[in-house]
Length: 86
Image (tube, rainbow, N blue to C red; front, side, top):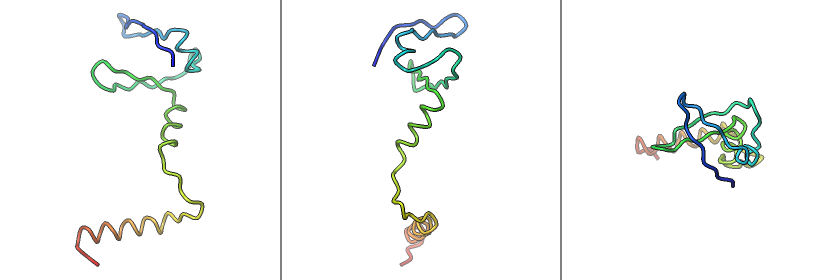
């Protein structure tokens, strides 16, 4: 991971230093999405990077997984908890 210092300009523009752009495989004109992650914290990411992060966090499902049966089981368990059935 490369770190570098930059400054927030008058119009809110930030220059991303070359070393950081190269390490992150960013190219001129590439769309970035900005996230405010808390006081003093901003995160920039491409759509592809966000998509990859979401898919990496998703659980791996078995090949024979039946989403309808899974949903029904979840619904039945929820009803049992809510209504004391079973």
